[in-house]
Image (cartoon, rainbow, N blue to C red; front, side, top):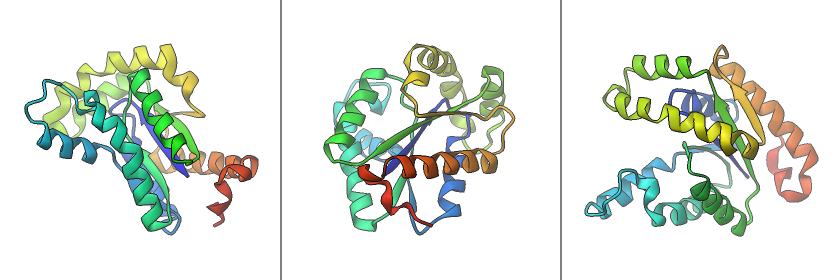
Length: 190
């Protein structure tokens, strides 16, 4: 089973994902599709795209890599990646469905000014701050247009710590597991 954390840069996706995995490392593993993108960027250095998500091979490979990791480890995946293009999201979710993995989509949201502040103050990814800041309006448009409606759960992290956000997602996972045991969620016992 896969739980995909989507949302703007600066919303807290990675921090929340780390909390989810740390709380139950036997059952959960973190998967960041960005590494698939890095590999493809190296292989397609001559491709004229600004974002590796624009490479059709990225959208085809992510479900397969996720499937392979889950199959090899026997663990459920917390997937962390911002996907703001609805067509790309549909391609990825269709690929995951074809591989018969249940998927829950969690939107990690925050107020725009909070996102901008977090991005500007991020010391780890400070080199990418301008690129990340440029995507905040794109995120807001996607959120309002389709992203919030496509999510199984929306978590507002404006004033919520990663630990509390992870606890809210864990509660939702427990509910989903109870509601969806026929869809492969039964392996979630803790």
